[in-house]
Image (cartoon, rainbow, N blue to C red; front, side, top):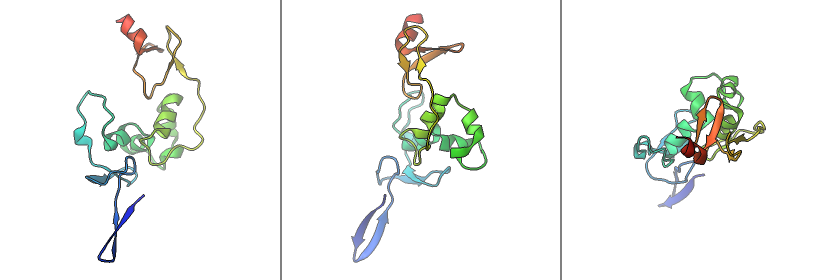
Length: 145
């Protein structure tokens, strides 16, 4: 949403990041032409920080993935995007806070559970490891290695 400032009876719209609302250094996304913080330079490699609006949208959304992979059509109904991820990750990438638009009616899925302790693992947010087709929560991963 844009805030309006009046100067000398002239109305000037102010662009805001569509994710965090800041008005500083902005750019438009290549994928969906939305205003977003031009802040990818703040990301420290291998830190796994989620402090960059631009990087978060590009890396953690179906919109960003769809554009990067050069799929046809809209990401919301792209069969290639749907088949590229396990259902849990597809839903996460389509509905998380890094999206300007969210996936409507996301498919249901069984939560991922740790193969050792059976705790639920949120694949989009939690730390975990994988061995073969088995997932291990952070605590059980630490014990294994």
